[in-house]
Amino acid sequence: MEDYKLVEKLKNEANISYEEAKSALEKSNWDILDAFVYLEDIGKVQKPSVNIFYTNEYKENHKNGVITNNKDYGNNYSNTKEDNTFEGIFVKVCKIIDICNNIFFEIKKGNKVFLRIPVTVIILLLIFSFGTVIPLYIVGLFFDLEFSLSGKRREVKKINHVFKLISENVKKVKGKLKRGFKNG
Image 1: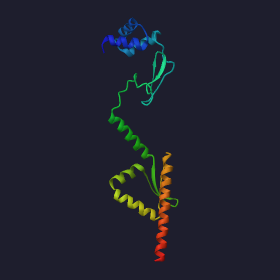
Image 2: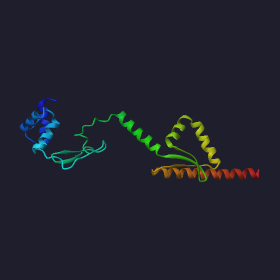
Image 3: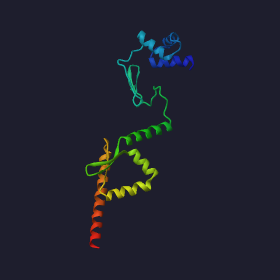
Image 4: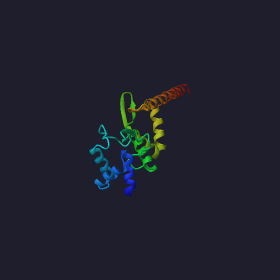
């Protein structure tokens, strides 16, 4: 950045005169961050009242003694690079995988758990061997196996309710089939 632009930027950010900004930059070897720290040290700019630590999700900056939230104002004062679409998609996929790794698919009979695996494995099995997994699920229902999910998310209860309804309907069909075979 040209010297003039650096001076203008420091002047506007620190709310000081052009001469003070130029002098501070000259004393700090034209490093704007060092110049800002120098201005804080000599009392021309007010130091932040507290130390602030932040994550990528939420950042705060001090401008003219007022705290602004970068998330609300378009990250105008952020030093982070802008996310491109690929990084955004990658982050979302990683979050979904993390969620699926923390929800477990369980196969039980009575109180005994036969199998407990992460939902991520179930999804992969469905993708690569759909024709095998679904028939095994249906056969398992006819052998009175119970299928459920366990995890800390709210959605788990809703899905377990659906599993329970499917299981109850299969039991009804199974009962009708048994009565049909006994009568025939």
